[in-house]
Image (cartoon, rainbow, N blue to C red):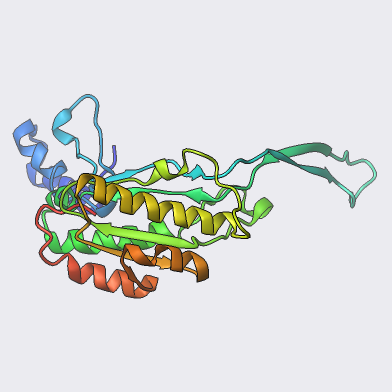
Amino acid sequence: MFLSAHQIERVAQFIIDKDGAKPTKKEVVPLLDEAHSVDISLFGRMVAEEASFNVDAAVQVAHALGVSAAEPEFDYFTAVDDALEATEETGAGMIGTVQMASSTLYRYATVNLEQLASNLASQEAARSAAVAFIRSFVTSMPTGKQNTFAARTLPDAVVVSLRDDRPVSLVNAFEHPVIEEGGASRRVVSARRMAAEFQNLGKMFDAPAVRTWVIGVDEIGEALAPLGDSTTLASLLSELEASLDNFGDASE
């Protein structure tokens, strides 16, 4: 069961104060259902045998989706012991392949600020947590197979929308695989599709975002510029936190 450090401290002090007396459920529930840490407040907690300790997640994260056709490739490798210290030692060797693919990815996540503030019991803490999550979502990289593939590619485009109605994913922009068009790379074509999907949905449902920020390099940034304020990551995070001072029921 996931507990925050503060919850663990409170439970430990409670046990000491009880001095061997049996606790009641009424006494224990507040200890484990208040003062949640940021990670539990963001991603929730489920305890199958006791629903009183459940925490509704404030974040939804979609699987990364390749926007273009991709064919699997195979990395051939061998591994041998080529410097045995003694003749009586037995060596080891192997040969094989590692399957891989390279894609331009669309990633999407949404933060329910109202739920996050409820979980943290603080709007100020919710603002800071939301900004920290966005920073991590944009800059973090998977850790698996890094020595083999060195997957250190930062996003070429970031779109952050502050909404007061409901979250909106742009994944349908990639229903058909992206291909190069008129000399434009797949990244640029992908950005153009994202921009078109964003604008078309806003018009169709008459539901524009409260405010949108975009980060993009070169032609990618130009394709996304009509969606909102072009900025840098540092400026985006600073402006976003200021914009969340009175977010009310808004979701990001």
